[in-house]
Length: 408
Image (tube, rainbow, N blue to C red; front, side, top):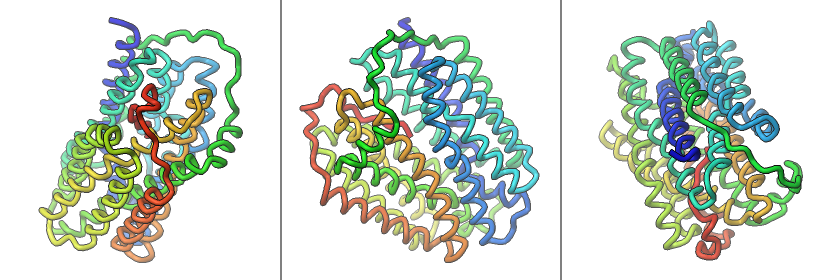
C-alpha cells in the first residue's frame, strides 16, 4: 500500500476512535460539573460554559505554535504528541475534585493536544495533490462519525458507570490510537524549498485587508460561536424536559447523535450543491435555516418534536463550516493557501472559545431559552451578510482547490 494511503487510513481510524472518545463526555460535561458540587442552576450554566471554553482559550494560542514546531521537527512527532497529550489531559480531568481543577485541566488539554489540525497537516504533506480533496474529506468523515456514535454510547455509559470513569475510557482510546500512529504512520520527507512563506502577522493582515476573506473569517467566528453557545449547555436544556427519568444522559446522547448523523449525511450533499448552485445562495440558506431551527427550540413541546428539530438542525448546519473553509481556500492566492487556511482554523477556534462563555453567561442571567433567541438572531444576521456582501466564486475557475474541506 502506498504511504499516503497507509497514513490516511491509520489516521482516520485513530481520529474516529478519538472522536468517539471525546463525544462520550463532551455532551454531558454540565452533569460532571454538577457531580463536582455545583448545584445552583445559574452557577452550573456559568461553569459549564467555562469548562467548555477553557480548552479553546489555550488552543487558540497554542495551535499556531505547535504548527510551527511541526514544520521544524516533523509532523508525525506533533501528531503523536497531540494524541498522547489529549489522553493525559483526560486522566487529569477525570481526577478533578472541584470545578476549579476541572477548568484548569481543560485549559491544559487545549494547550497540549490539538490532534485534528496535526493529523490534517500530516495527511496533507504526504498526499498527492490530485488526491488532496478526497483525503481531507475522508479524514473529516471520522470526526462526523465519532460525533454520531460517541454521544449515544456516552449517554448509556454515564447512566450505568458514572461520568468520572468515562474520562479514563477516553484516555485509553487516545493511547491506543497513539500506539497505532507510532507503528503505522510514516512521514514523507519534504524537499527543502526556499523560505518564501508569509509570516502569521502578514497572513492576518492580508485576510482582514481583503473584504471577502474578512467576511468569511467573521462568519466562521459567528457560526461557531452561535452553535457552541447552546451546545455547551444543551444537556441542561434536555434535562428540563425529562426531570422524571433516570436516563437523562442516554436521552441526551440520542438527541445529540441525531444532529451529528444528519450533519454527516448532509455535508456531501451541500458540497455537490455548492458546485452546481454556488456558495453564496447555499450559505445564506444554511445559515438562515440553522437560525430558524435553533429559534424553534424555544417552542418545543415534547421529545418527538425535539428530535425532528435536531435532525433538521443537523442537516442545515452541515452546509456551513466546510463551505466557509472551501471559500477561504478558493479566495486564497496560491502562495498563501496554507497560511490562510491556518487563519480560518484559528477563527473557528475563536468562535469555539467565545460561544460557551457567551452562552453560559446568558443562561446564568436570563435562562437557557434566551440563548436560543440570541444565537438564532446571530445566525440570521450572518445569512443576510453573506447574501448581501459575498461575491460568488465560480468553482470551475479554481477546480484544483474547490473541494469542500472542514478542519474544525
